[in-house]
Length: 152
Length: 152
DNA sequence: ATAATACTTTACTAATTTTGTCAAGTATTG
DNA sequence: CAATACTTGACAAAATTAGTAAAGTATTAT
Ligand code: FES
Ligand code: FES
Image (cartoon, rainbow over all chains, first blue to last red; front, side, top):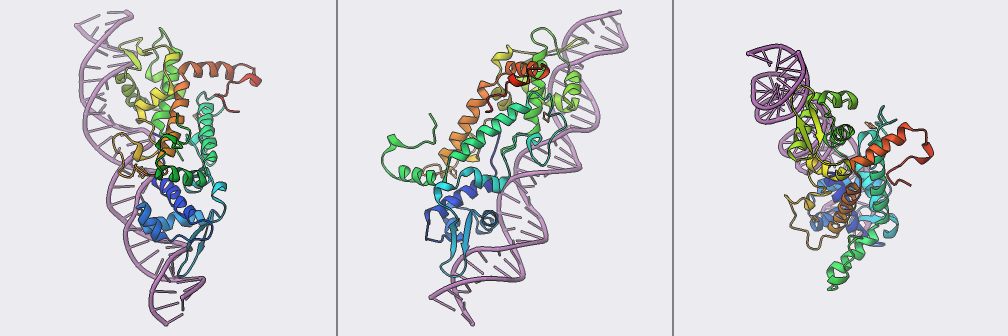
């Protein structure tokens, strides 16, 4: 339950690859495709959304590619996912575009709202920079010190 | 993003109605259907799963219906949702039945795992009893004291 | 007994969402 | 001016969701 679509997952992984080129090194779709094992055509779709949202910039022509539009520690996972999958909305009653007539007096409504808020708050605390830090730890030998995103 | 299916939502709402009959008053599918606005046929499907999972008991014949199999404060939302929608698995890589070959060295994997763990932990703290408490507050006038499931 | 109540099970299907592919562009630079 | 690389929109197969339908079985009040 509570699955994330591949679009969101691939999007975060693509942003991570682009973040590795920050601040001067444009990363091509082809590179992202090879490193993250996602088709070029699908990535085009995803990166277009992210560019229109202003999260990345593109550089055309030979030597071109994608660049982060802000510092890696200023871009949260929450922002990326929201662009690709819309706001966190556990139930359609909570979706800004849908709503529900039963909200008043609905016992579960506040529960789902609270869960959504918790998820959002968590994803807002994680940035691309955290992913880069995480990678350094994964590549190093300090297994005992791996940063596990707060998992106890 | 991160939507819950209607099955899960309706399931929790149905369990809430059954909890109101605890410990001696069987609640019929028809009653649940009317109060929660879900078709009888669909509820049959949902309640069957929950019964097979041992969360509720059924009493046949006139005067029959469904009863909670345990105390309302012993049944968490997490348990209900797991029966109806399977385990929390933000990505298919985390799904016990699927897995992923890239797990080693995957930067985002721990992130999704951590998020899933947080969601699960939260849902485990909420019980049917909490929903009943919440209803009392909603019906009362103490708007200032509404229990909001921890939303700040 | 038996009729009424109420749960049980399986099968099926329409609608939606997801997960992509494809093709024909446009822009930039060496 | 050719190669590189982004850009856009249309389209479709596959999977999932959200139900409906029908034909049961079990129990009890009368
Ligand atoms: S059913 Fe929509 S808010 Fe509860
Ligand atoms: S892609 Fe499967 S674990 Fe990261």
